[in-house]
Structures are given as structure tokens and as C-alpha cells.
Image (cartoon, rainbow, N blue to C red; front, side):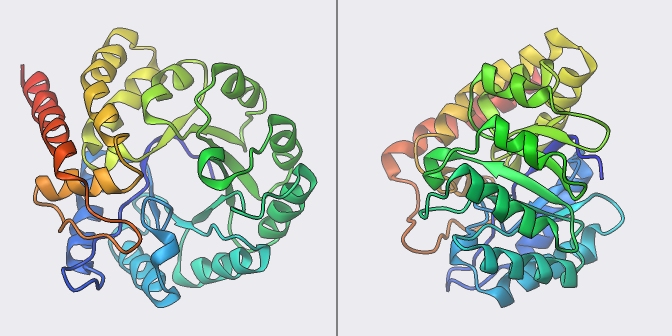
Length: 294
């Protein structure tokens, strides 16, 4: 499996009563494939994975398979604090028909680098290709490039999503790329720079709300159309800043609700975006639309 391009880490829409909104989810899936997204992540951290029951993840993956199978890859979020729980999610994803899994480093337990290697090798022994995911501010552990280098040699580990926005870091990882292993940015605001340096794509939060723009952004950066990529990136900067005003996925759900795509419902302990932060978010969306139409 070769992953590249713009890959949205999808939100999970909920109804006002707190249940899954599979009608809205199906519409999001179609919107993303029509807009040129290269793949989708279902049930990841942006999808409030920690608040989902296994039956709900099963329903989300089943919807994605019905809508997208054979069109673009379906990547299931399988992050967990314990290896056995994450491995069980890998098996579930396989049973549901997912094409690959995205596994964040185990959170809260803060494993050593040796523990991370053992964890991901255990997941890679399963039936689906594994994408490593490093996001230290949210997990409490940083998977170092040397650890990724060891894991990248495994035939069933196919990519890393690196959310550390540091050029030295992503350049070290890009040195590991080959025909089988890809580096994907996990930070919207620095993705253009990472792709320009050789990363193959982006697993994105903001692409939830502007999928066509992010597909074009990453394509332009990959193709060497620097002026075009920089122009889109500049137009997206206010939105990226607004989305960073609250813990993910609070602001991205507010943005999608503002566009009428979903209801603005999250599961506790997350709560909807503070009213004081909404004007900046709405202004950023309007500014992008105006700039894109100009």
C-alpha cells in the first residue's frame, strides 16, 4: 500500500441525542471522495475514538466500506493505551473491511522506545498494514526517528504520521522513505513545508471542512507548483489558527456545523466551542471562500 495526498481524519457526527448520525457520516464520505481526498481515517482521535463503543466503530467502518471500498483506502483508527486492546481493534477493522490502520503511540502509560517497538511490531503481526502515529502533546510519549527507523523495516508497517512540527524531525524521517514506507505530515500548518521536503502527504484535521482545497494544496506541493501551494497555504492560515483555538475536534466540529454538514455535538468531556471563539472561526471560513472565489 502506497499512501499519499490529502487524507482527512474524519469527525464522527452525532445526533442531538448523542447517537451516531450515520446519514451525515455517509454524506461526508461522499463529499470527501468527490473532493479528491486520497483516503480517509475513520474512528481516529479526530473522530473521538475514545468515546466510541466497538459497535459504533463497526457501524462507522461498515458505512465507509459501503460508500468507499475500491475507490479510496479506508484507514481505521486503532489507538489504545494497551497493546492487547489496540490489537483487538486491528482485528475488528479487518473484519469490517478496512484497508489499513492508524495506530497512535499508547497514551498515558508513557512506554519506552523499546516498548514502542514491541507494541507496533505486535500490531504489525496482525492482518492489516499499519501506519504509525506520533503526537507527543496528546499522548505523553515521543516516538523518536531512530525508533521509526527500526519499525520501518517491518514489511507490514507502511507509513508514519508525524505531528511534530519540526523540520529536522520530518527530514530525518523522510530519509527512511522507500517504495514501501511513506512519511505523512500530521500538522496542517506545516504540511506544505514537509511535503516540499519530500513527505508524501498529510493526514489532516482541517481537510474535514475544506477537502478540495487540501487535496489541491498537497498536489501542488508534491508537483513542485510552489507558488500555487504557497498561495493556498496562506489562504488557509487563518482557518488553521482558528481550529487551534480549542482542543481537537471541538473547533472542526463547530466549523462543519456552521456549514450545515453535521450537528455541533460532542461527547463528554468535550463540549462545543466557546461562543467567544466562534466569530474568528466563521470569519476564517468566509475569508477563505472569498479568497478562493477571487
